[in-house]
Image (tube, rainbow, N blue to C red; front, side):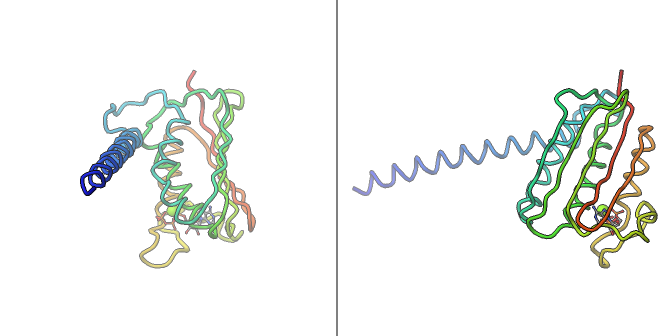
Length: 190
Ligand SMILES: Nc1ncnc2c1ncn2[C@@H]1O[C@H](COP(=O)(O)OP(=O)(O)OP(=O)(O)O)[C@@H](O)[C@H]1O
Ligand SMILES: [Mg+2]
C-alpha cells in the first residue's frame, strides 16, 4: 500500500506547513508591533501592555534557552503613556535582557504594572546576582559594563535613562543578591 502511506505523509506535511506558516505570520505581526514599522514618528498614546507583550514575544527564545519563568502581574486597567512606542520597547528590552543575563538558569523574572495617581508604574524584578552596592550609582553611565569584552557595550542603561527622561519619567533601582527591581514611572496620558 505505498500510495496510502505517501498520501498520509503528504497530509502530515501539508498540516505541518500550515502550522509553520501560522507561526511565521504571528511572528511577523509581533515584529511589526515591536518595531512600529508601520506607524508615525510623533508622540502618541502608547499602550504599555501592548509594548511589553510584543517585547516578551521577541525575547521568548531567551527565556526558553535559559529556562526562565515569567510572572506577569498586569493591572486590569492602565492609562496610556504619551510617547514613542518603539523607544519604550527598547527600554523593556534592555531591562529584560539585563535581568536574564544576571540570572542563573531556572530564574524568575516578574513584570508588574499598576496605576498610581496620574502615573503609570512598571516594575521589572529578577532573582539574579544583584548589583553590588558600590557600582549601583554607575550602572547608568555610558560604557559602564561588568560583562566580558565583546559581550556588553555598557550602553543599555544609558539608552534607557535617556529614553525615560525624554518621556518625563523616572527610573530607580533597588538591588540585593537574589532580588533586583528596576522601577519606572511615567506620567499617564489623560
Ligand atoms: N538586573 C540586573 N542584575 C544585575 N546586574 C545588572 C542588572 N542590570 C544591569 N546590571 C549591571 O549594570 C551593568 C550595565 O548595564 P547596561 O545594560 O548599561 O550594559 P550591559 O548590559 O553591560 O551591556 P549592553 O546592554 O550594552 O549590552 C551591567 O554590566 C551589569 O553589571
Ligand atoms: Mg544591557
